[in-house]
Image 1: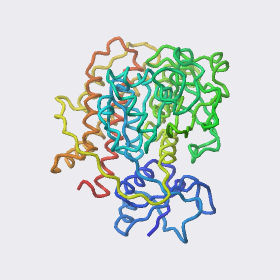
Image 2 (image 1 turned 135 degrees about the vertical axis):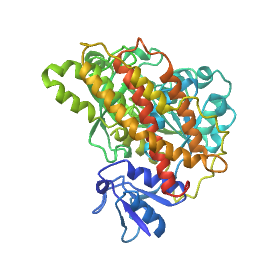
Image 3 (image 1 turned 180 degrees about the vertical axis):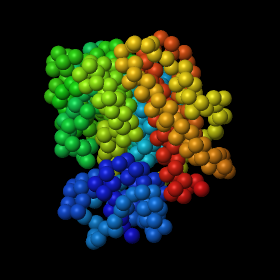
Image 4 (image 1 turned 90 degrees about the vertical axis):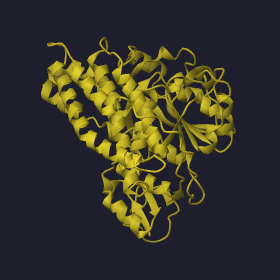
Length: 481
Protein backbone atom coordinates (compact mmCIF):
# COMPACT_ATOMS: atom_id res chain seq x y z
CA UNK A 1 0.00 0.00 0.00
CA UNK A 2 1.01 3.62 -0.39
CA UNK A 3 0.82 5.69 2.80
CA UNK A 4 0.61 9.44 3.23
CA UNK A 5 2.77 10.63 6.14
CA UNK A 6 1.65 14.18 6.88
CA UNK A 7 3.49 16.56 9.18
CA UNK A 8 0.28 18.27 10.33
CA UNK A 9 -1.24 14.96 11.49
CA UNK A 10 1.89 14.29 13.56
CA UNK A 11 2.18 17.69 15.24
CA UNK A 12 5.30 18.47 13.15
CA UNK A 13 7.36 16.14 15.38
CA UNK A 14 10.61 14.65 14.10
CA UNK A 15 9.46 11.09 14.82
CA UNK A 16 7.74 11.41 11.44
CA UNK A 17 11.05 11.94 9.65
CA UNK A 18 12.67 9.25 11.81
CA UNK A 19 10.09 6.66 10.77
CA UNK A 20 10.11 7.66 7.11
CA UNK A 21 13.89 7.53 6.86
CA UNK A 22 14.24 4.22 8.72
CA UNK A 23 11.68 2.62 6.41
CA UNK A 24 13.44 4.11 3.38
CA UNK A 25 16.76 2.74 4.69
CA UNK A 26 15.27 -0.73 4.27
CA UNK A 27 14.45 -0.15 0.62
CA UNK A 28 10.89 1.18 0.76
CA UNK A 29 10.07 3.65 -1.99
CA UNK A 30 9.78 7.16 -0.54
CA UNK A 31 8.47 10.26 -2.26
CA UNK A 32 8.74 13.87 -1.11
CA UNK A 33 5.82 16.12 -1.98
CA UNK A 34 7.30 19.25 -3.53
CA UNK A 35 4.15 21.37 -3.53
CA UNK A 36 0.95 21.62 -1.52
CA UNK A 37 -2.31 20.07 -2.68
CA UNK A 38 -5.90 19.71 -1.45
CA UNK A 39 -4.95 17.05 1.10
CA UNK A 40 -1.24 17.57 1.68
CA UNK A 41 1.47 20.12 2.40
CA UNK A 42 4.83 20.62 0.75
CA UNK A 43 7.33 18.41 2.55
CA UNK A 44 4.93 15.55 3.33
CA UNK A 45 5.90 11.99 2.39
CA UNK A 46 4.38 9.15 0.42
CA UNK A 47 5.79 5.73 1.26
CA UNK A 48 5.11 2.36 -0.36
CA UNK A 49 5.08 -0.40 2.26
CA UNK A 50 3.60 -3.82 2.98
CA UNK A 51 0.97 -4.47 5.65
CA UNK A 52 3.52 -5.47 8.30
CA UNK A 53 5.53 -2.25 7.86
CA UNK A 54 2.36 -0.16 7.86
CA UNK A 55 1.45 -1.74 11.20
CA UNK A 56 4.91 -1.00 12.59
CA UNK A 57 4.63 2.63 11.48
CA UNK A 58 1.35 2.89 13.38
CA UNK A 59 2.79 1.21 16.49
CA UNK A 60 5.69 3.69 16.38
CA UNK A 61 3.11 6.39 17.02
CA UNK A 62 2.94 7.81 13.49
CA UNK A 63 -0.45 8.72 12.06
CA UNK A 64 -0.50 7.65 8.41
CA UNK A 65 -3.41 7.20 6.00
CA UNK A 66 -3.58 5.26 2.78
CA UNK A 67 -3.04 7.45 -0.25
CA UNK A 68 -5.94 7.35 -2.67
CA UNK A 69 -5.27 7.62 -6.37
CA UNK A 70 -2.09 7.91 -8.40
CA UNK A 71 1.13 9.70 -7.57
CA UNK A 72 0.64 13.47 -7.85
CA UNK A 73 2.85 15.43 -10.20
CA UNK A 74 4.60 17.10 -7.27
CA UNK A 75 5.79 13.77 -5.79
CA UNK A 76 9.53 13.34 -6.28
CA UNK A 77 11.36 10.12 -5.39
CA UNK A 78 14.16 10.58 -2.88
CA UNK A 79 16.99 8.22 -2.03
CA UNK A 80 18.01 7.34 1.48
CA UNK A 81 21.53 8.84 1.67
CA UNK A 82 24.72 7.20 2.84
CA UNK A 83 26.11 10.10 4.89
CA UNK A 84 29.72 10.76 5.85
CA UNK A 85 30.08 13.19 8.77
CA UNK A 86 33.46 14.85 9.15
CA UNK A 87 34.68 14.16 12.69
CA UNK A 88 38.45 14.55 12.60
CA UNK A 89 40.75 17.33 13.77
CA UNK A 90 38.99 19.75 11.43
CA UNK A 91 35.66 19.15 13.20
CA UNK A 92 36.55 17.96 16.70
CA UNK A 93 33.97 17.45 19.43
CA UNK A 94 31.60 19.19 20.02
CA UNK A 95 31.54 20.57 16.45
CA UNK A 96 30.58 17.24 14.88
CA UNK A 97 28.33 16.29 17.82
CA UNK A 98 25.67 18.88 16.98
CA UNK A 99 25.27 17.39 13.51
CA UNK A 100 25.49 13.84 14.89
CA UNK A 101 22.53 14.44 17.20
CA UNK A 102 20.50 16.29 14.55
CA UNK A 103 21.03 13.60 11.92
CA UNK A 104 20.23 10.79 14.35
CA UNK A 105 17.05 12.52 15.48
CA UNK A 106 15.98 12.94 11.85
CA UNK A 107 16.48 9.23 11.17
CA UNK A 108 19.86 9.18 9.40
CA UNK A 109 22.70 6.92 10.44
CA UNK A 110 26.12 8.25 9.47
CA UNK A 111 29.67 7.14 8.94
CA UNK A 112 32.06 9.25 10.98
CA UNK A 113 35.11 10.03 8.88
CA UNK A 114 38.36 11.98 9.19
CA UNK A 115 40.81 13.41 6.69
CA UNK A 116 42.94 10.27 6.50
CA UNK A 117 39.91 8.10 5.71
CA UNK A 118 38.75 10.58 3.08
CA UNK A 119 42.20 10.60 1.45
CA UNK A 120 42.12 6.78 1.44
CA UNK A 121 38.89 6.70 -0.59
CA UNK A 122 36.29 6.50 2.17
CA UNK A 123 33.82 8.75 0.34
CA UNK A 124 33.39 6.20 -2.47
CA UNK A 125 30.73 4.41 -0.41
CA UNK A 126 28.86 7.62 0.50
CA UNK A 127 26.38 9.96 -1.18
CA UNK A 128 26.62 13.03 1.05
CA UNK A 129 29.44 14.68 3.00
CA UNK A 130 28.46 16.83 5.98
CA UNK A 131 31.00 19.47 6.98
CA UNK A 132 30.50 20.94 10.49
CA UNK A 133 32.03 24.27 11.54
CA UNK A 134 35.65 24.17 12.59
CA UNK A 135 39.07 23.88 10.99
CA UNK A 136 37.79 22.97 7.52
CA UNK A 137 37.83 26.71 6.88
CA UNK A 138 41.57 26.28 6.12
CA UNK A 139 41.12 23.20 3.89
CA UNK A 140 41.08 19.56 4.96
CA UNK A 141 44.69 18.73 4.14
CA UNK A 142 45.92 21.62 6.28
CA UNK A 143 43.47 21.07 9.12
CA UNK A 144 43.78 17.27 9.26
CA UNK A 145 47.53 17.08 8.60
CA UNK A 146 47.09 14.75 5.62
CA UNK A 147 47.68 14.81 1.89
CA UNK A 148 44.94 14.01 -0.58
CA UNK A 149 41.76 14.77 1.38
CA UNK A 150 41.02 17.99 -0.53
CA UNK A 151 41.51 16.23 -3.86
CA UNK A 152 39.30 13.33 -2.76
CA UNK A 153 36.48 15.68 -1.77
CA UNK A 154 36.80 17.56 -5.08
CA UNK A 155 36.54 14.27 -7.01
CA UNK A 156 33.62 13.08 -4.87
CA UNK A 157 31.63 16.26 -5.49
CA UNK A 158 32.48 16.37 -9.19
CA UNK A 159 31.14 12.82 -9.45
CA UNK A 160 28.07 11.41 -7.70
CA UNK A 161 28.39 13.11 -4.30
CA UNK A 162 26.88 16.18 -2.67
CA UNK A 163 27.78 18.25 0.39
CA UNK A 164 26.20 20.13 3.26
CA UNK A 165 28.24 22.59 5.28
CA UNK A 166 27.79 25.04 8.17
CA UNK A 167 30.01 27.91 9.26
CA UNK A 168 33.62 27.02 8.40
CA UNK A 169 32.34 24.01 6.47
CA UNK A 170 30.29 26.35 4.28
CA UNK A 171 33.32 28.60 3.74
CA UNK A 172 35.30 25.55 2.57
CA UNK A 173 32.65 24.92 -0.11
CA UNK A 174 32.81 28.51 -1.41
CA UNK A 175 35.52 30.49 -3.22
CA UNK A 176 38.13 33.08 -2.40
CA UNK A 177 40.89 31.32 -0.48
CA UNK A 178 43.55 28.73 -1.38
CA UNK A 179 42.36 25.25 -0.43
CA UNK A 180 38.66 26.06 -0.78
CA UNK A 181 36.63 23.89 -3.13
CA UNK A 182 34.78 26.53 -5.14
CA UNK A 183 31.59 24.46 -5.38
CA UNK A 184 29.83 27.78 -4.91
CA UNK A 185 31.68 30.28 -7.12
CA UNK A 186 31.06 33.16 -4.71
CA UNK A 187 33.33 34.87 -2.20
CA UNK A 188 32.27 35.61 1.40
CA UNK A 189 32.38 39.20 2.62
CA UNK A 190 35.11 38.09 5.03
CA UNK A 191 37.36 35.26 3.86
CA UNK A 192 40.42 35.02 6.10
CA UNK A 193 39.45 37.38 8.92
CA UNK A 194 36.15 35.63 9.63
CA UNK A 195 36.00 36.74 13.30
CA UNK A 196 34.96 40.17 12.00
CA UNK A 197 31.29 39.25 12.42
CA UNK A 198 30.69 37.55 15.80
CA UNK A 199 28.43 35.22 17.78
CA UNK A 200 24.72 35.39 18.44
CA UNK A 201 21.26 34.17 17.55
CA UNK A 202 20.06 35.46 14.19
CA UNK A 203 16.77 35.43 12.33
CA UNK A 204 16.86 34.45 8.66
CA UNK A 205 14.12 35.02 6.10
CA UNK A 206 13.50 31.94 3.97
CA UNK A 207 12.90 32.16 0.25
CA UNK A 208 10.93 29.92 -2.09
CA UNK A 209 13.53 27.14 -1.97
CA UNK A 210 12.45 23.68 -0.76
CA UNK A 211 14.82 24.13 2.21
CA UNK A 212 12.00 26.10 3.82
CA UNK A 213 9.29 23.42 3.55
CA UNK A 214 7.25 23.24 6.74
CA UNK A 215 8.89 26.34 8.26
CA UNK A 216 7.52 29.82 8.96
CA UNK A 217 8.77 32.69 6.76
CA UNK A 218 11.53 33.47 9.30
CA UNK A 219 13.51 31.18 11.56
CA UNK A 220 16.00 31.79 14.37
CA UNK A 221 19.21 29.86 15.04
CA UNK A 222 22.72 30.31 16.44
CA UNK A 223 25.41 31.99 14.38
CA UNK A 224 29.19 31.60 14.87
CA UNK A 225 31.23 33.63 12.36
CA UNK A 226 29.75 31.94 9.29
CA UNK A 227 30.50 33.21 5.77
CA UNK A 228 28.26 36.03 4.53
CA UNK A 229 27.63 36.01 0.77
CA UNK A 230 26.98 39.42 -0.74
CA UNK A 231 27.33 38.75 -4.49
CA UNK A 232 25.96 35.63 -6.13
CA UNK A 233 27.01 33.88 -9.30
CA UNK A 234 24.26 32.71 -11.68
CA UNK A 235 25.09 29.09 -10.80
CA UNK A 236 23.97 29.57 -7.20
CA UNK A 237 20.75 30.67 -5.53
CA UNK A 238 19.89 32.23 -2.21
CA UNK A 239 17.60 30.10 -0.05
CA UNK A 240 17.52 32.60 2.85
CA UNK A 241 18.83 36.01 3.84
CA UNK A 242 19.84 37.45 7.19
CA UNK A 243 16.91 39.42 8.57
CA UNK A 244 17.86 40.60 12.05
CA UNK A 245 20.03 39.97 15.08
CA UNK A 246 17.86 38.35 17.75
CA UNK A 247 20.46 38.51 20.52
CA UNK A 248 24.24 38.72 20.79
CA UNK A 249 26.09 35.82 22.37
CA UNK A 250 29.37 35.02 24.05
CA UNK A 251 28.90 31.32 24.77
CA UNK A 252 32.25 29.52 24.31
CA UNK A 253 33.60 32.44 22.25
CA UNK A 254 33.60 35.93 23.77
CA UNK A 255 32.94 37.79 20.52
CA UNK A 256 29.31 38.93 20.60
CA UNK A 257 27.79 40.07 17.33
CA UNK A 258 26.40 43.59 17.73
CA UNK A 259 23.71 45.53 15.91
CA UNK A 260 26.20 47.77 14.10
CA UNK A 261 28.22 44.86 12.69
CA UNK A 262 25.05 43.00 11.72
CA UNK A 263 23.60 46.03 9.93
CA UNK A 264 26.89 46.79 8.17
CA UNK A 265 27.91 43.35 6.96
CA UNK A 266 24.99 40.93 7.23
CA UNK A 267 21.48 42.41 7.04
CA UNK A 268 19.84 41.42 3.75
CA UNK A 269 22.78 39.26 2.64
CA UNK A 270 22.58 35.58 1.82
CA UNK A 271 22.49 33.25 4.85
CA UNK A 272 21.72 29.93 3.10
CA UNK A 273 23.10 29.21 -0.34
CA UNK A 274 22.38 26.44 -2.82
CA UNK A 275 25.02 25.69 -5.44
CA UNK A 276 24.89 23.39 -8.46
CA UNK A 277 27.90 23.75 -10.75
CA UNK A 278 30.33 21.63 -12.72
CA UNK A 279 32.22 21.22 -9.44
CA UNK A 280 29.26 19.69 -7.64
CA UNK A 281 26.08 20.20 -5.63
CA UNK A 282 25.95 21.63 -2.13
CA UNK A 283 23.91 23.54 0.44
CA UNK A 284 25.84 26.11 2.46
CA UNK A 285 24.58 27.32 5.85
CA UNK A 286 26.23 30.49 7.10
CA UNK A 287 24.44 30.20 10.48
CA UNK A 288 24.35 26.94 12.45
CA UNK A 289 20.99 25.16 12.28
CA UNK A 290 22.63 22.05 13.77
CA UNK A 291 23.25 23.89 17.07
CA UNK A 292 19.54 24.58 17.32
CA UNK A 293 17.76 25.10 20.61
CA UNK A 294 20.56 23.58 22.68
CA UNK A 295 23.13 26.30 22.01
CA UNK A 296 20.45 28.96 21.78
CA UNK A 297 19.32 28.05 25.30
CA UNK A 298 22.72 28.76 26.84
CA UNK A 299 23.30 31.89 24.79
CA UNK A 300 19.99 33.06 26.24
CA UNK A 301 21.02 32.08 29.79
CA UNK A 302 24.12 34.27 29.58
CA UNK A 303 22.31 37.15 27.89
CA UNK A 304 18.53 37.33 27.70
CA UNK A 305 17.78 35.63 31.03
CA UNK A 306 20.39 37.58 32.97
CA UNK A 307 19.11 40.84 31.50
CA UNK A 308 15.37 40.28 31.96
CA UNK A 309 15.34 38.29 35.19
CA UNK A 310 14.39 41.34 37.22
CA UNK A 311 11.53 42.09 34.82
CA UNK A 312 10.09 38.63 34.18
CA UNK A 313 10.92 37.02 37.49
CA UNK A 314 12.37 33.59 38.23
CA UNK A 315 9.16 31.66 37.46
CA UNK A 316 8.82 33.08 33.96
CA UNK A 317 12.52 32.71 33.20
CA UNK A 318 12.56 29.11 34.46
CA UNK A 319 9.61 28.28 32.20
CA UNK A 320 11.36 29.87 29.23
CA UNK A 321 14.50 27.81 29.84
CA UNK A 322 12.58 24.57 30.32
CA UNK A 323 10.73 24.94 27.05
CA UNK A 324 13.69 25.06 24.72
CA UNK A 325 13.45 21.84 22.69
CA UNK A 326 16.95 20.54 21.95
CA UNK A 327 15.67 17.39 20.19
CA UNK A 328 12.89 19.17 18.28
CA UNK A 329 14.85 22.25 17.22
CA UNK A 330 12.90 24.12 14.52
CA UNK A 331 16.10 24.80 12.56
CA UNK A 332 16.71 21.03 12.16
CA UNK A 333 13.88 21.00 9.61
CA UNK A 334 16.23 22.98 7.33
CA UNK A 335 18.82 20.19 7.58
CA UNK A 336 16.21 17.55 6.75
CA UNK A 337 14.94 19.51 3.75
CA UNK A 338 18.45 20.24 2.51
CA UNK A 339 19.36 16.54 2.57
CA UNK A 340 16.18 15.50 0.78
CA UNK A 341 16.72 18.17 -1.87
CA UNK A 342 20.24 16.88 -2.52
CA UNK A 343 19.01 13.28 -2.81
CA UNK A 344 16.32 13.68 -5.47
CA UNK A 345 16.06 10.72 -7.84
CA UNK A 346 13.99 10.14 -10.98
CA UNK A 347 12.70 6.79 -9.74
CA UNK A 348 12.29 4.97 -6.43
CA UNK A 349 15.72 4.01 -5.10
CA UNK A 350 16.76 0.55 -4.04
CA UNK A 351 18.63 -0.40 -0.90
CA UNK A 352 22.04 1.28 -0.79
CA UNK A 353 24.92 -1.10 -0.18
CA UNK A 354 25.94 -0.99 3.45
CA UNK A 355 29.44 0.23 4.32
CA UNK A 356 31.77 -2.31 5.85
CA UNK A 357 31.31 -2.77 9.57
CA UNK A 358 34.33 -1.13 11.22
CA UNK A 359 36.17 -2.78 14.10
CA UNK A 360 34.27 -2.03 17.27
CA UNK A 361 36.22 0.07 19.77
CA UNK A 362 36.36 -1.18 23.35
CA UNK A 363 33.74 0.09 25.74
CA UNK A 364 35.03 3.18 27.56
CA UNK A 365 36.15 2.75 31.14
CA UNK A 366 33.57 5.39 32.09
CA UNK A 367 30.20 5.39 30.34
CA UNK A 368 28.59 8.62 29.21
CA UNK A 369 25.74 8.43 31.71
CA UNK A 370 28.22 8.01 34.58
CA UNK A 371 30.44 10.84 33.33
CA UNK A 372 27.44 13.16 32.97
CA UNK A 373 26.19 12.26 36.45
CA UNK A 374 29.62 12.94 37.94
CA UNK A 375 29.80 16.28 36.12
CA UNK A 376 26.40 17.27 37.50
CA UNK A 377 27.41 16.24 41.03
CA UNK A 378 30.63 18.24 40.90
CA UNK A 379 28.97 21.27 39.34
CA UNK A 380 28.85 24.19 41.74
CA UNK A 381 27.77 27.79 41.51
CA UNK A 382 28.56 30.40 44.10
CA UNK A 383 25.69 31.48 46.32
CA UNK A 384 24.40 34.84 45.22
CA UNK A 385 25.81 34.50 41.71
CA UNK A 386 23.64 35.92 38.88
CA UNK A 387 20.84 33.49 37.93
CA UNK A 388 22.01 30.99 40.58
CA UNK A 389 18.49 29.69 41.22
CA UNK A 390 17.80 29.22 37.51
CA UNK A 391 21.11 27.46 36.99
CA UNK A 392 20.13 25.02 39.74
CA UNK A 393 16.78 24.45 38.00
CA UNK A 394 18.65 23.55 34.82
CA UNK A 395 20.96 21.21 36.69
CA UNK A 396 18.03 19.35 38.24
CA UNK A 397 16.27 19.10 34.88
CA UNK A 398 19.38 17.52 33.41
CA UNK A 399 19.55 15.03 36.29
CA UNK A 400 15.92 14.04 35.64
CA UNK A 401 16.63 13.52 31.93
CA UNK A 402 19.69 11.46 32.77
CA UNK A 403 17.65 9.13 34.99
CA UNK A 404 15.17 8.53 32.17
CA UNK A 405 17.96 8.03 29.64
CA UNK A 406 19.99 5.47 31.59
CA UNK A 407 17.64 2.43 31.25
CA UNK A 408 16.70 3.31 27.67
CA UNK A 409 20.33 3.49 26.63
CA UNK A 410 21.19 0.25 28.42
CA UNK A 411 18.37 -1.57 26.63
CA UNK A 412 19.37 -0.58 23.10
CA UNK A 413 23.08 -1.08 23.76
CA UNK A 414 22.37 -4.61 25.01
CA UNK A 415 20.31 -5.34 21.89
CA UNK A 416 23.11 -4.21 19.58
CA UNK A 417 25.79 -6.03 21.59
CA UNK A 418 23.85 -9.30 21.25
CA UNK A 419 24.28 -9.29 17.47
CA UNK A 420 26.84 -11.46 15.68
CA UNK A 421 28.91 -9.65 14.43
CA UNK A 422 28.70 -7.53 17.58
CA UNK A 423 27.12 -4.44 16.04
CA UNK A 424 26.47 -2.68 12.73
CA UNK A 425 27.96 0.65 11.82
CA UNK A 426 25.30 2.55 13.73
CA UNK A 427 26.72 1.13 16.97
CA UNK A 428 30.22 2.23 15.96
CA UNK A 429 28.85 5.73 15.34
CA UNK A 430 27.64 5.83 18.94
CA UNK A 431 30.88 4.41 20.34
CA UNK A 432 32.92 7.20 18.75
CA UNK A 433 30.47 9.87 19.89
CA UNK A 434 30.37 8.50 23.43
CA UNK A 435 34.15 8.37 23.73
CA UNK A 436 34.47 11.99 22.58
CA UNK A 437 31.75 13.18 24.95
CA UNK A 438 33.17 11.29 27.93
CA UNK A 439 36.66 12.64 27.32
CA UNK A 440 35.32 16.18 27.33
CA UNK A 441 33.18 15.66 30.43
CA UNK A 442 36.09 14.23 32.40
CA UNK A 443 38.41 17.13 31.59
CA UNK A 444 38.77 19.81 34.26
CA UNK A 445 36.25 22.68 33.89
CA UNK A 446 36.86 24.59 37.11
CA UNK A 447 37.40 27.92 35.35
CA UNK A 448 34.51 27.60 32.87
CA UNK A 449 31.41 29.75 33.42
CA UNK A 450 28.35 27.84 34.71
CA UNK A 451 26.44 28.27 31.44
CA UNK A 452 29.27 26.68 29.49
CA UNK A 453 29.62 23.78 31.93
CA UNK A 454 25.90 23.04 31.71
CA UNK A 455 25.93 23.39 27.92
CA UNK A 456 28.68 20.80 27.76
CA UNK A 457 26.78 18.38 29.98
CA UNK A 458 23.54 18.84 28.08
CA UNK A 459 25.32 18.34 24.75
CA UNK A 460 26.44 14.90 25.93
CA UNK A 461 22.98 14.00 27.25
CA UNK A 462 21.17 15.20 24.11
CA UNK A 463 23.66 13.33 21.92
CA UNK A 464 22.86 10.13 23.82
CA UNK A 465 19.10 10.79 23.71
CA UNK A 466 19.10 11.32 19.95
CA UNK A 467 21.16 8.20 19.26
CA UNK A 468 18.97 6.22 21.66
CA UNK A 469 15.85 7.23 19.74
CA UNK A 470 17.51 6.23 16.46
CA UNK A 471 18.49 2.87 17.96
CA UNK A 472 14.96 2.34 19.28
CA UNK A 473 13.66 2.91 15.77
CA UNK A 474 16.15 0.36 14.46
CA UNK A 475 14.82 -2.21 16.89
CA UNK A 476 11.20 -1.32 16.15
CA UNK A 477 11.48 -1.55 12.38
CA UNK A 478 13.20 -4.89 12.51
CA UNK A 479 16.94 -4.65 11.97
CA UNK A 480 17.76 -5.26 15.62
CA UNK A 481 15.42 -7.48 17.69
